[in-house]
Length: 639
Ligand SMILES: Cc1cc2nc3c(=O)[nH]c(=O)nc-3n(C[C@H](O)[C@H](O)[C@H](O)COP(=O)(O)OP(=O)(O)OC[C@H]3O[C@@H](n4cnc5c(N)ncnc54)[C@H](O)[C@@H]3O)c2cc1C
Image 1 (tube, rainbow, N blue to C red):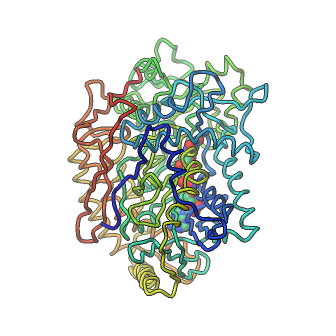
Image 2 (tube, helix red, strand yellow; image 1 turned 180 degrees about the vertical axis):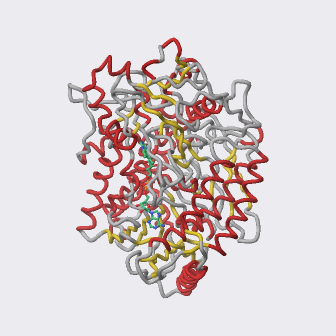
Image 3 (cartoon, protein in one colour; image 1 turned 90 degrees about the vertical axis):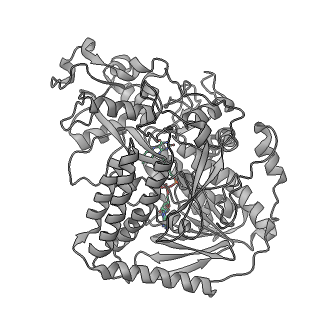
């Protein structure tokens, strides 16, 4: 293994760790910062905030994204909000409570020190974004408004209607644009990172493909930051943008970075159900809707009456019944599993067996249509445009769908992977969410990483230096470039008869069935065999078409699907070895009599970090033990 699996958590009481660490870390003096080049791959909330902040400090930054503009990164899709422990509502929130909710929500599979820091920084993020002009919703008196998200009994979610991600990204993008204008950031849109270059055990650059011309080139730097988002599209159908993929992190894993907890994938409870074999994407209905919407199914199986014709006494508001304290605001893993259970038991409200109601009748009676439109107007419009049904008149129909990935590249407290010089931020790292992320905490984490953590920790790495001067003429760049070219040619040369999308769909279906919302030993073993067979077929039968030296979207997708095919195997292995249920990882063999996830802390209180050992040998699992000093290990309860 390259580097070390050492978390580097600072000593001392948890509330002092970050403060003390910031003081103890080495600084790069302002004049010396100009001498350092940093590559940031990704321009979503994590990447854009990091690139802008590093450039503002004086580093030279090269920022890459595959979209035509940084502001089209997938972060723009985030709807519901961003958490912060501001306690504007005076309802009992605090940094400690956000910390506690997040550790418990993640089912005790995250690092306490990281989570505490995240909660602590959350309050700074809001101030920074307000200063940038992000138009958060406000109360009549001018204070910022809040709503509630799952897994919390306080209102701490800041929002800009149903477009929070877009507004936050515009804030980060404007900070990034300023630095592009000043020449501190060189932006490379429509450019895909296809490999990482490691020299003397350190990350020193990347190899990219220009998606318009097909040119393959190298870029050298003193440090590389990956902010490349999550891998939910391994399931083919997900709420993520079509372009989201695992390529950057997986290629880094193949160069020695450890991949942590790949099987921790989040299935979001409130999405528009899939409606046909030709669908290529699923649509999220934000969790914020669970503030006012009530989830129910008819008490009678197969009841085909219109929802309005079913009297309240004949409805099962099952989340309110099973979890009276949290009701419709239980965490996502719990809400998703219960929806699946209801549908599996025959209570679905959608033909085909995959849907429950999310009903706003009571909220409309309480707040009026205009009150609801003010909070969720754009989400209601989106639902109506997709389904043809007006949710002001009839309940929405929803079902769980792949949405977010808690797994990612392993990082230490400084957000550096085991590969020195390779930092990983945002959804691309595994860091703070354990086995289940709470709603509105991804935006918080991405911005905490980019605006407030990395700018300190990368300086600490660079200041410790002794980095040899390296440029793209180094033999390592030539070698990796040649490998990238060879792989591209190989994909084009297969010239089979099945489309890339057909393979991706097949992979997604099998991952959903064997490694999706619930998993079993037999299913995972079967899944592993099927993934291997599918991968072999892919390399014999895929048809890509076109050529490498051109705009070729089929080639782009083929490379990403090829990586998903390799990565899927590690996901299944990870799920197989974790013989417990925790958070979103639900192994049917390990559940309480009430059907809740049953952890095995004695055996599995660790982060699993997988080392790639080559195409023909099994990856090796390493463990980072987790200990809980401040939030005591307990069976999660939301009743
Ligand atoms: C529909 C939806 C709604 C959501 N709503 C919320 C919400 O309300 N609150 C919340 O907290 N979270 C929400 N989330 C989750 C949240 O949006 C994401 O976790 C977060 O935005 C990820 O940000 P990121 O910067 O890590 O990655 P992304 O925004 O995904 O950005 C990834 C960047 O990496 C680039 N990239 C990737 N691979 C490569 C490569 N190989 N080469 C070059 N560039 C590459 C992309 O071009 C892009 O710029 C939502 C997610 C979805 C799907």
